Image (cartoon, rainbow, N blue to C red; front, top):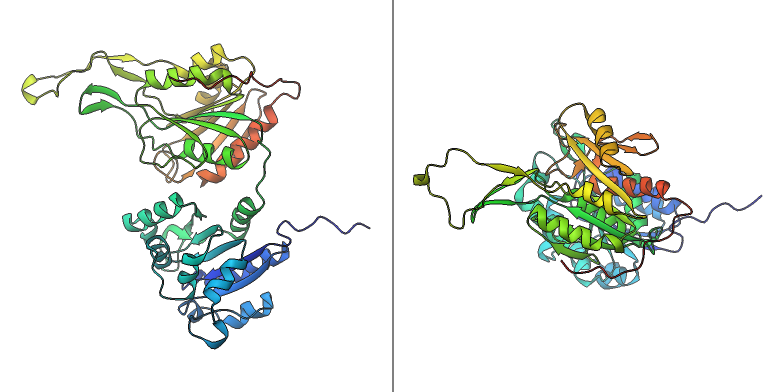
Length: 416
């Protein structure tokens, strides 16, 4: 008999940081999974974490002493030696306080001091109660960490320790393990592919300060661009106005109007072998845009509109061998409208979501969608983080790539 597959984290050294949350007991399950996958794990606990679970539990499982303080005799220089030896630091659970310290560079205990000396990847799985996760201060700290390359395994929605229902439950163990794997042993199954992604809304000017637009945040398109890049693809992201930072390693092309987005995508179409149209392009624009701000005294009581360019239809008409993916944000008859768009636009795959579902769609970090492809296959997904959904979309695209299809000509991306 064979010895079986090699554990996915074999030979990897990890630091597991545990902070003071009721979810600290879940870190035991995370530790078990990491060890099962072959990782060598050193556990660091904050003082408040030891009030929820004893260090002995982690010591028995990891077969190593738990590190707790900067000033304990056996902890000499642990804030330097542990991160120097580690391939990654995982903090699970990460409290709101830990997120703040990590983002601001505060160092008042062993774990936070380690982060300032570390040069290895940082992965955090937040856990908190109430409305803390959506608090602007917490969101600001999360965004700061992400800009510096930290991986955030977003908390899940459900019953919290307080009895309330909300987003704050630490992610399931398998999601955390998947994040560690993706960082340390990334899948490069999109290497050699060239992916063109659109994201965000477009703004169609009424005057210099007003415009017609929609509620799109761009988060889904940015998640797809990030996922494709991490899986080895060369990626160009054409984005309407958003508050998001472009993913690292992605060529970023900012646009404002539907016309600008259409031109930017069409000129790059020959370069791409996969086009993912995640942008929510405004359907209409004012027939005329005033050169000066309109005043109330101008007594404008109506606004004349005209349709914007159907970018997806233009891309479908001009493509050669590219796989083309569209999105359908609907409020009723989801599958019927999605199928109609799939066939009318002559595309390969459509991602359909009902934006009236709580916690899904515009502005949310989660999405609940149904994928429909040109072969008639349909696959529904529950409410999951957009970053996870991005990988599912890429997996579905892979199944549609024709085995005999030749790559698109390796032409220059062009300039709008």
